Amino acid sequence: MRIRSYFRIDERRQSQLSRAMQVVLVGLVFIGLDRGNFGIVVNALVGLGVTYLPAMLERDYRIPMDAGLTLWISSAAFLHALGTVGLPGSETSFYSGVWWWDHLTHALSSSVVAAAGYATVRAVDEHTADIYLPPRFMFVFILLFVLAFGVFWEVIEFAISGAASLAGTGSVLTQYGLDDTLLDLVFDAVGGVIVAVWGTAHLSDVVGALERRLEREPR
Image (tube, rainbow, N blue to C red; front, side, top):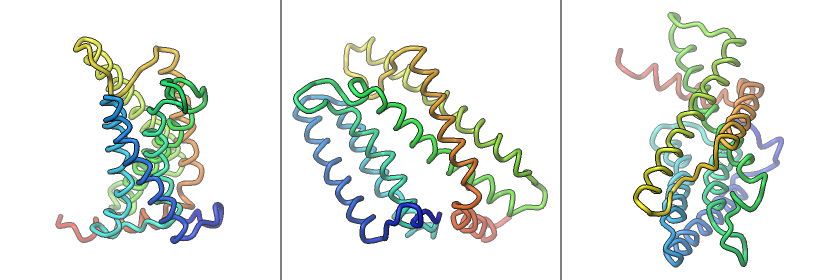
């Protein structure tokens, strides 16, 4: 994915920013432990794990991860975890206290999901002559894929919130009602549109790497 020309970020600066995010996420784990907030701890640990995912994919699976792509994935996980923590001097989280935070994280996270779906399906399309996906269909597929994943995520949020309520404990994920769910899906679609419009130009390296891996797999 070649997005360095847009954001003008090099590998050194990306590494510094990623390390800073990881330090903050470790700090969030201790904040959650200090407050006895299981949700903060879990989300911070998951976010911390995701920040190491690009390096693992590049090292173990030879998937090219340039500075922009790595920072994109890490930022999505970091901002979600940060959103569960209270605002300075308040117990109100960024998610409930900053009106646009949820929209930002949904659009960013859904764009990462859309990119993964696009790269995988495009690689399969390029790998075999038995499958042909026209460019216009790819646009529709990405939107449907993101919305389907978004609905699945909302169901998970509802189930976890319901279980936590029945158990009388804090929830790792929180759902704020039907209106919030529908708005989440709108911003999920925004993330999908971003990838649908620019994915072909900026995910070609990842698609190529996945296709080469498929070529090496025994049939």
